[in-house]
Image 1 (cartoon, rainbow, N blue to C red):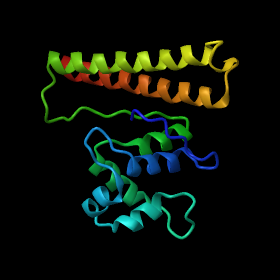
Image 2: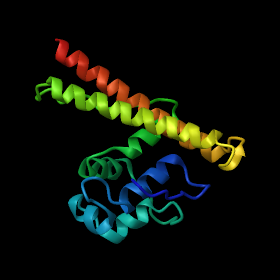
Image 3: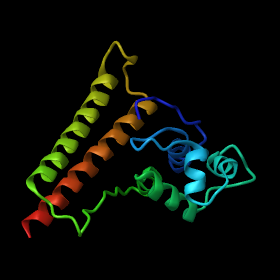
Length: 167
């Protein structure tokens, strides 16, 4: 995502991830209840209500969350849930796909790109001309943590591919 949508302060990371998953286009062009709802057998308005933490009459269930992530092609809700439990998760290689040097190079490049994102967030947080001067805010610390965990998960993904190819 290239935008910087700020979740409400009282939303949990899982609630924020579900809201963002539904409301912002991902790299596959999927966004909104109109796109995702019919794909998982839900009315668009119902799905919109389920992911809205401020709507108390409907809540997102685990089955629906999993279906949303499968259909969207990525798992931000799972990652947010794992982070809340002090864990990280990363995709395992498809056992039916041969791993070659090009896929390893691509995975390595993704890891390096995420490392750059982490370093950039740290640089911005310590920049004396930044939003808080050289004092780190809670929001900056949260952004550094999020970028760092993505960075770590991409490294673990790369290691898993490397091990698969070595067999």
